[in-house]
Amino acid sequence: MAEKIILTGDRPTGKLHVGHYVGSLKRRVELQNSGEFDKIFIMIADAQALTDNADNPAKVRDNIMEVALDYLSVGLDPAKSNIFIQSYVTELTELTFYYMNLVTVSRLQRNPTVKSEIQMRNFEASIPVGFFNYPISQAADITAFHATTVPVGEDQMPMIEQTKEIVHKFNFVYGDTLTDPQILLPDNKACLRLPGTDGKAKMSKSLGNCIYLSESEEDVRKKVMSMFTDPDHIRIEDPGKLEGNTVFTYLDAFCNDAHFAEYLPEYANLDELKAHYQRGGLGDVKVKKFLNNVMQEELSPIRARRKEYEQRIGDVYDILKEGSKVAREEAAKTLAEVKHAMKIDYFETPEFLEEQLAKYTG
Ligand code: ATP
Ligand code: MG
Image 1 (tube, protein in one colour):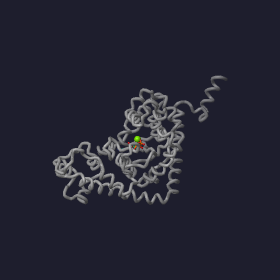
Image 2: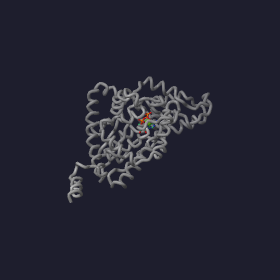
Image 3: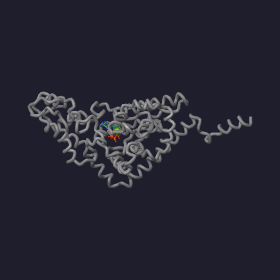
Image 4: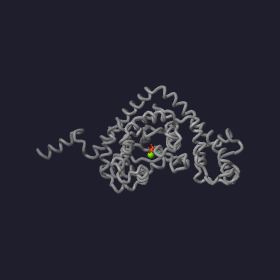
């Protein structure tokens, strides 16, 4: 049977936040521990981070270790998941260069995630070519490892679509070589795109509306208590709205019935709490306190594990170095397959010389 292989990753543009956690990290750890996968590659995408941070290399460098610590603290296990740094695997840029020939400019312009990111960064007038091109580089990341499964958040859907198109085109033009990947989105709708604490559509490092995995108990509490709710829910007795109410979206993402038994036993489950809120008579503070308890329960073991790894930075460095070596060997194999399929492997087999000899000397 064909191997099952995971590739996914994050940009080292900041510490990881709870949006990453519910959207991708938590699932990765479950998949890792399911034992169903033959290989798991987790990439710290520094080269991609530089596509919109070219003038700030220090930021990218500073966040390599932060992201690695976040990975280890949520339970990614280097014995099962190969953690590596993208730029070390130079084969990825070579793959990107060849894939660029299979994609049109207008196709890249249609990518809705890139469109909104261009807007967010005020790149409209002057988009760096590298940034514009990053969906192609992501196709290289995914295919270099023959990934079958890519567990990511909803914003990555257009990237996986682009990757699939490149795979189909490549295999059609050059013969069956690349593996067609499947996206794996969170089952829970609230986790697809966790909003920011300000109520904005997406929690994102670039928007500064995040609760970070490494944040202290007190800072998490403060952020939860000042979270965006229903602006028309002014007095406790007013009926409250759930749509666009960030606190309830977070409860959808984080809480289960056991949390009610533990912290809010007057309700059996989230449906009862929601019904009361909509009826009126339930204050935001009470709901926020409950959410804070739920989130602290999830985050405190992560925080504790991070403290341990912070005392072992040398080991974390070795994990990254070793992981990058393994990833590079894997990508080099795929690049050789690609170059063979594209007939640009002149020195790897005797064929090229034989063809030329036959042509010129008969
Ligand atoms: P940046 O602002 O630098 O792009 P980001 O916060 O968007 O940072 P990425 O590194 O681009 O984070 O995303 C890494 C992974 O986390 C992707 O799989 C993405 O889909 C997922 N993800 C990011 N933000 C969220 C969110 N708010 N909800 C669910 N998943 C998310
Ligand atoms: Mg992003």
